[in-house]
Image (cartoon, rainbow, N blue to C red; front, side):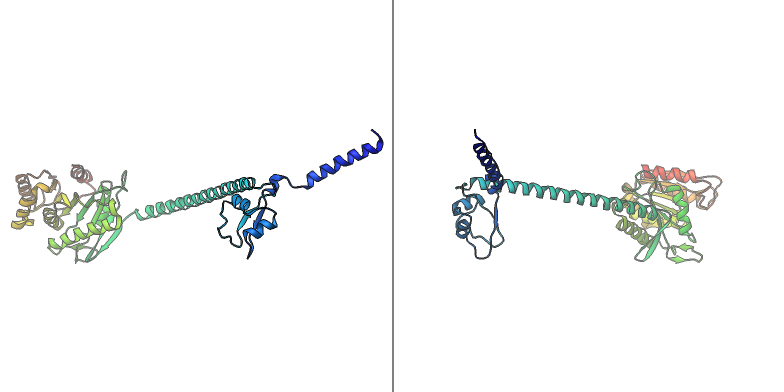
Length: 353
């Protein structure tokens, strides 16, 4: 090969390489897109790109009669892609990528939302736990129409589940606030300790029931319903325990015999036959089967000792399960500190049976 021929050969090869690099590949050409402008038609677009309307329609999965709108993107087949098949493949590939990208973005957004919700939930749980800890610590007061009551939350395992009420009806001139604190030390792990306040103001925080069990009846039911409204299914509506001492025993015996569904367990401290009378005994006769258990505690030095034994006999005759404790060293008094075990054992027997 002569020198001139060799030069021409290399120039030809170099020119072919330059053309190959400068000319778009068929795959690149098939990915061209066109954004529809105002007043454009498929025919005008096909003429501009030297292709056919049919090829554009096939590439974009549309019909000749379908309207096109300004801003709409169309894939344009290359002049060698006469039926638009390659452009359609490119369009489908592009759409798959876009859908994958959208799915990825949506997944990213959902993950972010879940993370934010989890963060808010953790914050909310911490705040609720703090509020719950603060709310459930110590003595609280419950207001309701016509009165009020002191109360303590249940303690120990299961305290946030459905728990019974142990409702204390104070004695005449009793201090319901102080008495509630005393009973909470004995009974709060058995359920809600609730202490309605008698309507009679006897000075210095001391209250009474004005020798009227009906006022205690209203207060007991109102306190029960108000607590249930406030705390929902954490508060047991039926099968609760009434506790009453002296005038509170008078209230307890009369409320319990008339409300055996709400209060079917009683701890009566210093019971007296005078507390029932004819109507009370009639109610006992009607509702005896619904009274679950009764525990009587009266000291042998208490003036109501003998009447308490009579009340025990009435309950036994009515076939109500009853137990009695009569400490020889106790008079008409409430000895929650020195005889805590006695009161505790009575309440456990009542609430567990």
